[in-house]
Image 1 (cartoon, one colour):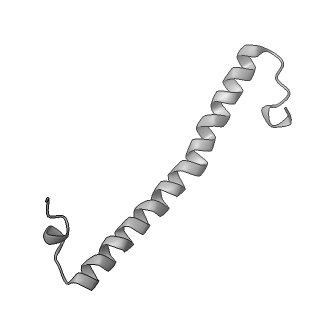
Image 2 (cartoon, rainbow, N blue to C red):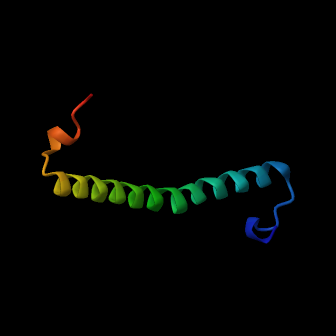
Image 3 (cartoon, rainbow, N blue to C red):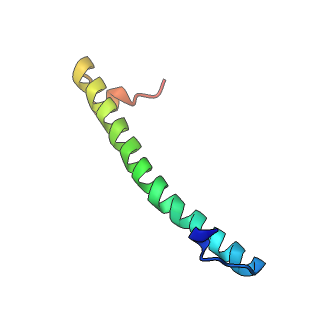
Length: 62
C-alpha cells in the first residue's frame, strides 16, 4: 500500500488507515456539507421569492 508508506506492523497500519479515514472525511465531508447548505439556502430563497412568503411563514409548523 503505497499511500500508507509501506507500513508492515499491524498497529502502525491501523493508525495510518485511521488517519487516512479522518483526513478523507475532512477533505470530502466538509466541502460537501458546505455545498449542500448553500443549495438548501438557495432553494429556500427561491421558495420565498416565488411564493412571496416571509421566513416565518415558510417555516410555519403544520
